[in-house]
Amino acid sequence: MHDDNDIKSDPCGPQARDAINRLIDVVLEGLRHGHFRCAITSAIGKNNKRDLVIEAGKSHKFTIPEDDLPR
Image 1 (cartoon, rainbow, N blue to C red):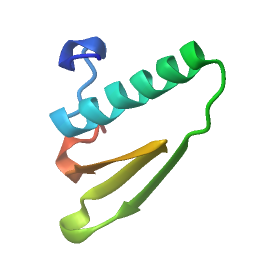
Image 2 (image 1 turned 180 degrees about the horizontal axis):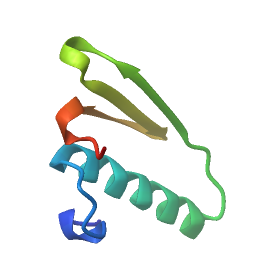
Image 3 (image 1 turned 60 degrees about the horizontal axis):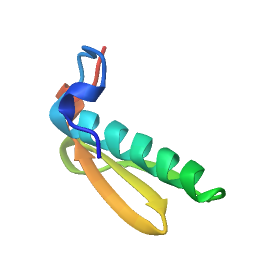
Image 4 (image 1 turned 45 degrees about the horizontal axis):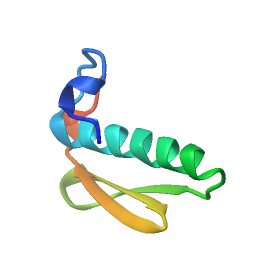
């Protein structure tokens, strides 16, 4: 697994970093396995927060506040 320091000093918040690190893990796990399918969906939820779902065997949901996104 990756930790918060895996993403180069991007100005994103902790939830966005967690989502990106999880995506990296999903891709690496799939490559090690040899084949995989991954789907990423996003929608704007309450209070302009972004709901991001990564589906790859298991589903991982992240709620990212708008303030955590880089400008």
